[in-house]
Image (cartoon, rainbow, N blue to C red; front, side, top):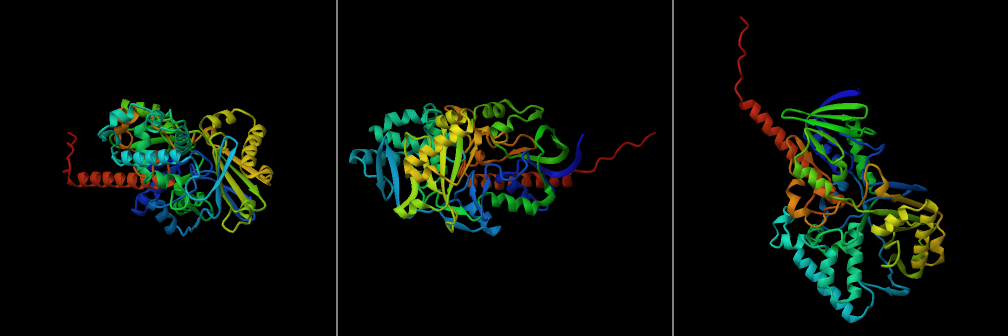
Length: 470
């Protein structure tokens, strides 16, 4: 039957969202318990030891301007940041043609650059017209949600090269083909991330800084503060909820709580058995929110050799399985590390081959970008996030056509005593670590308000005299 525990609030998931909920509620004096299916905390953040006290990040890792909440939590926990390495030139490949450049874009045909500029300007202008809290209320929501982003690209971008670049960026950021998400979702995502420029750049953008000790250290320190209030290897299988309590049944533990917060990706939240069943709108929503497909790799070398060639490690190409590669070396450069992202169709294809063939394909990509030495790392690490049983994809969920306008209100709306958190529920920095923290803070505030309201109602209710036995 398992251990029985009574708490004020139970939280499902020990990622950044769930741990933030727990920390906020514990600070407010509430008894909490976090139930985590994995044998570790951190969710979609994960450190990999590469020796000599250094780590690399196998999951979410960067923070940048306007990501104020994750930055605040890191400061409070005593975690410093250091800048992503940006000194030197960048590389772009179109076909076999190599472009070495500094600045935002390689030296392309002026018509292509002008087309790209007008398209990103228009994208930002339209994105600002999407209300972050209620994207479905945008003036042209029905029109924008009725087409894919790929359709908009074909209509709004005149040159094939500019379309190719924008398609590559958005498909990589959302880890799926641009034909899989709506224009409305793309506009919401760009607005939530402070604009296309910040989303897509290193210095001054979303990839500007890294966390000393690796991004998972945030979750590790939050969990350390919570102590026994975090239970690992305790996947929640069933949630019974009624007008007075929530009862959660996990492996080896049964928890009774006044409220519960489900802080896991929507596709995983849908796999819990709810009694009574969730309203149709919520269930239909989670049926329609697929996770992106990402294989993240880190190749480790004895030094960041590309720096001696005046390169900063950033390389990209539409035709390569590794769409983007960046310098992911430790801050003191005791080793050189190239991090690469395989997304969408390429990740699905390479996810079906054996590990040796996949590693070879990745190293061939890095060799294509950075020469023969890039194909001979000292160590190689990869995580296929779509194959992780308690994630089933990264970086987050995306909204296909029709989902925002038909089911959007069900995303964050509490159901009785059940509340929802996770980066997918955040209207700001959706899909990022900052969004996860924001969602946890919002869910904690909801729960505290509900608990306080219940307490006030109980205090105001007159005592009821029971009839005496005759």
